[in-house]
Structure formats: structure tokens, C-alpha cells
Length: 229
Image (cartoon, rainbow, N blue to C red; front, side):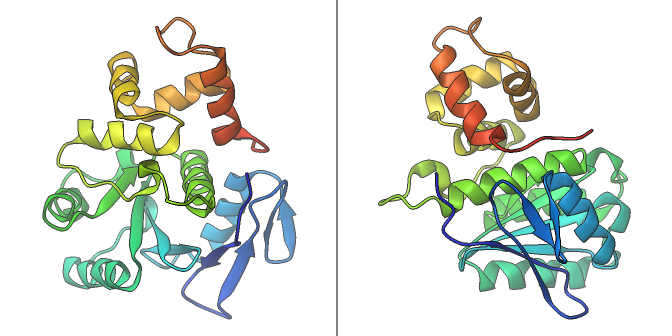
């Protein structure tokens, strides 16, 4: 599995860009980090005043991270920034870190749903920096894999319900199709529960998911990566 280009971390302020190569080690600000969540936490400290942390993967794909501790305060300007990113990049996905900590009355909840249904905007809620690091690394690896034509799992999904979004996420981040993604969602409450199970052991108790499935997906999701709690 080869990564064709580095991920570019941009904090929107200061001198500009930091680079992270998806290999055995991660690099940021001249320092190497073996654990991607350490890299992200370090970068978050430098860009904490921004309501959207933009990560550019290749030339036409971007990941935007919104942290629950640094929420946008103005819907109009935040909406304009989101649509500006969508206009600038062919594909974009937004991660909501520490999603359970976002107040229920914050406009992000409504905007996330309306922008998904009306504009096909892709959102992924995460609980911690470790969750976010896993998503960033997995998405980047799959986007940057050179395959012609690209598999359906690498196409930005469009969905109208949380259940559909979870199934698309599983299909996109694992070596499986829609049918098996549906089966997995019948056994797990969320994609993160599935990823945690893959990290801890196999899925042999689920019919149709043997040792080979576990091996391939553990390599895809967790190879050369340690997640620190």
C-alpha cells in the first residue's frame, strides 16, 4: 500500500504549512511522532484559535476538523467557510471531534443535518483525538491509494440518515461492500465499536467474516499505528 503524496496540515495562521508523511513515523514542526494522535494534539495546540482545522489530502480532497472546545460562534460566517471549502475541493469530509460534548442547542447540530440532506456534505462525529487520528489516517490512505478506476469505497458518500451514514462509513473504511456493511451494522452499535473489535480481536463469531477479513482490515486500519487513550 503506497501513499502517493504527503498530507498537508494547515493551521490558517503563522508561517503556513506543516507536513506529515503517512509512513512509519509522523512529522510535524521538525519533530517525529510515532502516534498520529500525538501529531494531531500538537497541531491542535498551534491552531486552536481556528474554528475549522483544514487538512489537505492530495490536490482535490480535504478534511475539515471542528473541535467541541473551539466551536464557531457565528452561523453565517461558518456556513460561508464550509461552502468555500466545498467549492474549492472536489471532495471534502468534516470531522466533529468530541461530538458528545457539543451543546444540544448549538447550531452545528442543525447545520450538519441540513447541509447533509440539501448539499451532500459529509460529516463524521468522533469522540476523541484518537478517534480523529484513526479517521484521518484511514481516509487519507484510501484516498491516496492509486487504483484505476477508483473503488466505490473512495467516493464521497451522500446519505440522509445516521444509519445510512454509518453503513457508508464502514463500507468506505474497510475492505467490504454494502451488503456486508449492513450485516456488520446489525451486530455493532456504531462503526467505532466495529473498529475497536477489530483492534482487539477477530470477527469469527459473525457468519461470513473469517480470519482473512480480520487480517486484511486490521492491516488497513491499524498497520504501523498505535492509538493512545
